[in-house]
Image 1: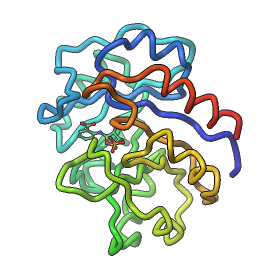
Image 2 (image 1 turned 60 degrees about the vertical axis):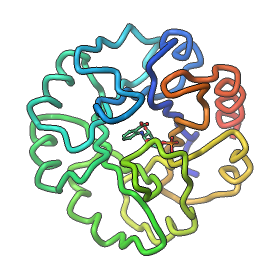
Image 3 (image 1 turned 180 degrees about the horizontal axis):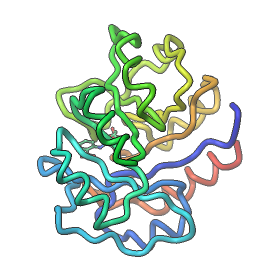
Length: 207
Ligand SMILES: O=C(O)c1ccccc1N[C@@H]1O[C@H](COP(=O)(O)O)[C@@H](O)[C@H]1O
């Protein structure tokens, strides 16, 4: 690993200030109406601790709406969790947005299809390929990521829970940047378990 792994807590809806006290590097908010973690398009993100980076998660959303949300909430990153094309990413990139493009991985995923996204994305995020766009709580086979050879750093995601710590510790990839956690740290959608999060973050930060 080139650096300390970053932590991104995603799908926040409740107790935002309390969770920001745990000092994750990124906090994500879901701007996708079909998600149980949808915060609503009128949502105003409360002031977060320190330099926690605010990420807006969108699924096949209009460019206009993304720009509106970015401006309203001063989003540091835009996570695109749907079928957004390289052309669409290019347009947002040209407007100065920092992008995290998500790819849903299965055993047959062809990493060559990522190449056209490379110039426009700050990070990639690898999630599991399920019937849902995200927040499925399902894991994919991380070994598959050894086929990823581009140099855009990535977040590892998809059903990661506290019990995965040893697996994370033993996983090596030169481009892994951070761990994205969501549904496995919840009492119910959007309400995170601060004790579990605290334990996990402490362990990851010690790596
Ligand atoms: O959490 C959601 O409801 C969601 C809905 C639509 C797109 C993305 C969503 N969440 C993201 O999914 C991944 C994996 O989450 P999980 O650990 O499997 O629960 C994560 O990046 C969430 O931000």
